[in-house]
Each structure stands twice: as C-alpha cells, then as structure tokens.
Image (cartoon, rainbow over the protein chains, first blue to last red):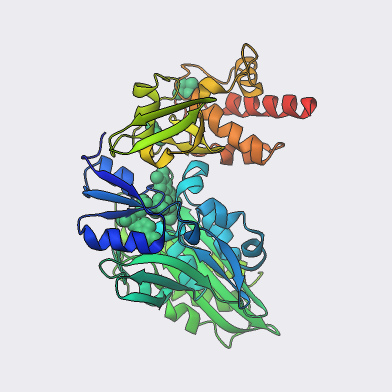
Length: 285
Length: 157
Ligand SMILES: Cc1cc2nc3c(=O)[nH]c(=O)nc-3n(C[C@H](O)[C@H](O)[C@H](O)COP(=O)(O)OP(=O)(O)OC[C@H]3O[C@@H](n4cnc5c(N)ncnc54)[C@H](O)[C@@H]3O)c2cc1C
Ligand code: FES
Ligand code: FES
C-alpha cells in the first residue's frame, strides 16, 4: 500500500513547525508516524505536506522539574520507559509504556503523537489522566497548558486548536505515600487496550486519602477520569472490600465502546475487573 | 522531492526520493536489498524490521525521508564477510525457520533485544519478539535460536 503523493519537510525548531503549519492548512505534523503513516497507506488520511518534528532537539528530553518530570513531546515510548527518573516515581508510565505495541513501535512512536492522535484505545491518555498531568501546547497565538482531564475530548478529538502542536507533558511530583499502576486487557494483535485502567492511589496510615482512576478503551469517547471510583475510595481503609465496592462503580453512565472483539456488556464487565486489579496493585493488596 | 543520504550496511547512498516513498521500498526497490520482506504491510508482522541507528524499526511504517542521515543495518549487513552473525548461526542450528519469510525480521528484532539484554530469559525473548509473527515454526525453535545466540555471544565476550 502506497500513500498518496505528499511533500515532506523537516522542521528545525518548534517555531518553524508552527509557521509551516500556519502556511499550509492541509499539512500534518509527523512525529513517529506510527499512527499517521499506516493511516496514509490506507488512504484514510492524505495531507499535502508532512512537517517532521521528530528531530527537533527542543522536543526530545526528559527532565526533573519542581519535583515532577517534564517530557518533551517527541520523546519515544522507549525513551520514557527506559528513563530512571520515571521508573522510580511513576509506575503507571512504565507499566503503560511497556505494553504499547511492541519493541519496534516503542522505538519510534512518541508521547506527543499518541496524545495528539487520541485513539480511544491508546494507553498514554489513561496514564496521564491518572497522574493529573498537564499538556503544554504551542501555536500561532502562543503557548498554553491544559490539564490532561481537559485535553482528551472524544473519539480522536482533543483540545488542540488548529495550528497548535503538543510540546511537552508535565507529570506533577507524586504525593508521599502514593503509588500508580496500569492494568490492561489487550487486543491480541495490535495490543491496543480493549480495556486499560490507570490508577493512582495515596494511602496515609492505612486510609486512602486520594485516588484518581481513569479508563481507556472502554468509552467510545476515549480515556476518561472515572470520578465515581475515586469517590468510593477516598476516606476508606485500603482493604479488599473497599476496592471491590469501588471497582463495581467503574464505567457506569458511560457511552460504551463496542467492536467485534468486545460487546458493550463485556467491556463494562472487563472495566470493573481491570479496575479492581489496578486498585489491588495501587493499594499493594 | 526530499534528498536523503543514508549509510546502509556500511555503504553511503544519496538519492532524491518521493515524499511518500516507504523506507522498505527504498531498501528493496532502490537499493536492491530484498532481504527485508514485506509481510502484512500494515505494521503488524515485523517481517520488514531493520535497524535504524541501532534500534529495531518496522520499515513498512516509515518514510525513506525520515531516515535521512541515519545508519541502517539490514539482514544483508549482519554477517561479517563469510562469518555468520551468532543469531544467523542460532537460527540454522536450532531450526529457527521453516519457510524463512519472517526470519530476517525475527533476526533483526532479536539483535536489538540482545543488544539491550544480552542474557534474556525465555519470557523476555518471547516478549521481545512480540512484534514479529511467524506462520510456520510455532516460535519454540525461534526462542531456542535466540538462546543459542545469547550463549555464543556470552562465550565470545
Ligand atoms: C503495530 C502498532 C501497535 C500499536 N499499539 C499501540 C498500543 O498498544 N497502545 C497505544 O497507545 N498505541 C499503540 N500504537 C500507536 C503508537 O503508540 C503510535 O506511535 C502513536 O499513537 C502515535 O505516535 P507517533 O509519534 O507515531 O505519531 P504520528 O503517527 O506521527 O502522528 C499521529 C497524529 O498526531 C499528530 N501529531 C504528532 N505529534 C504531534 C505533536 N507533537 N503535536 C500535535 N500533533 C501531533 C499527527 O499530525 C497525526 O495526526 C500502535 C501502533 C502500531 C503501528
Ligand atoms: S510488513 Fe512491516 S510490519 Fe508487516
Ligand atoms: S518460518 Fe515461515 S513465517 Fe516464520
């Protein structure tokens, strides 16, 4: 399969990428290309120009900042899971990242590309929501920072405005006593999440003081914060009974996704099972 | 049209290419290196795996233009002269192939795995080769082939 003819330009800086995008309304940003190029080969997407941002040095870094970690948008999945700072603080990023596709995909695909693409079964969006991360974007009207909970708006749909690019993801410092995990039931061929649950739980003296739980693959609208699960945990003791009750609240009142792998009812069931497993992991049970 | 310069198996090449030219087609059709196979053409099977700056990548899902400036190794570049790479020896000794269609991709991906983890467990080998599909062998002998290579590489170091 061969994509439609397309021009290719490599941007040397973020500002060059933004100007090229502004001058070419039919253009698309190219990062790893591991969502875009397969789509172009299927002719689901036929931009006139690809603006390659993968090698912009100011977009590929991972650094500790204010006790948290800032990740440049062009960092690959492999960059992230092999980073010692992320390994030591953000279990959910490692567990989610290691389950993305396969070695070859993780060597090329980027964090910024994954979240801008916003596949409703992608793994990073769930992890970023559970960590209360924020996403920095830049466009012709300047830069802004969007909480992950407000970034993912629906099916392949984000808060990115026309002409904007994702530049950075900021993971806040993890609270003392917190632990974050990811559990996923994957599509056996693509390894995308049929159901993925990211949970970040803070425990103080046996009591859950904070909990953010998000699900991906479950809703047709993509990853979302499941507030009912969090609410069922906060203030309770970190016990099996607590997590069982909380997991039972998962994926209620959601427009459920459905495909030939999993019906709505099965997805909802899996969402509860995987939420329970994630909570057990995050509570050390 | 973008102009690219790449070093493939130690030889530098410069070509003007169409923006849409896939890296695997550049390797096969422009350079004549047909050891890199196209299996699924949809980024799932790993038959097209090569090394780009030392990392295993699926060349059916990249543009040639993205590889500009890169150092590429394909299956043709793995042996040193007549001396097979330990992975090639392993696949031969352990019967790691039947039809051989998946083998170049398997070997290139396994080479990335052994670079990162010279002594992988069976589980790590199976996980490391998740992106490569074989329709013939049932994988057991592929795992043994990689273990054979790991043993050889360890003995040599
Ligand atoms: C075989 C296979 C298996 C996969 N399995 C999984 C999986 O299990 N889980 C999972 O989550 N993902 C999976 N993926 C998707 C993979 O993670 C992609 O790498 C990712 O979705 C897109 O990242 P990219 O850098 O390749 O983006 P690209 O393909 O380059 O771009 C994707 C889209 O985002 C836009 N874009 C890219 N970067 C930016 C930016 N910085 N700012 C604004 N827009 C931007 C592009 O214009 C395009 O529309 C898989 C992919 C493949 C091929
Ligand atoms: S041909 Fe590239 S992954 Fe199958
Ligand atoms: S040996 Fe035939 S596909 Fe693997």
